[in-house]
Image 1: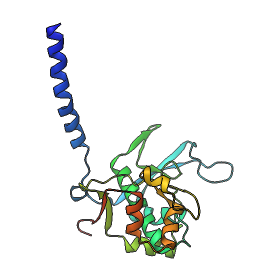
Image 2: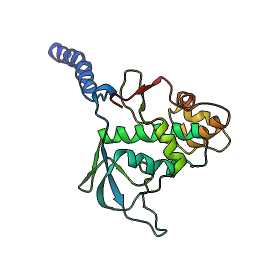
Image 3: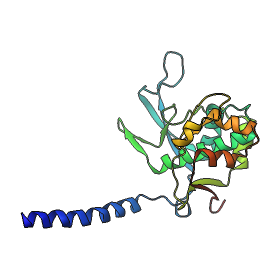
Length: 209
């Protein structure tokens, strides 16, 4: 019994160290993580309405320029007619979501990829970028929104509700797309919008950009 107790005690002391080492190995600090040049997109088969099916089989994986991907996602996730501050907040969310998944690829049905082209990740439609969303992306081109310790993290977002600040998403550390427009209409900057939904984060310049 004494030997068993001693073994349990030793394991209890070792486990936190092992966990900390593992967590440290999984860090993705902005200063040591190269900015992506491309992203791998799994293209899924269309449903009967002709749009990519989130549950459809993967047909192939394509490599797309990383920044072109952002430009072609943004108008499909944020309405191009929305305020520029909302679109800038959206551009950073789309960028950081993509960057995080670029660092954490998945393998499904024999295909390795970073994201797919559906709402499973972010809606991607080739060559659908728009002038207003392009302008928003250009305005935050050299910026990233990261953890206080500099780690890249996934900026999740949901549709939310129109004409509503969507406080409930703040508690979940997710940005409401409609909420970003609400706050932009009420004079908030893109940084204030990001700070409202993602607490304890910071805006930084991407090294070398």
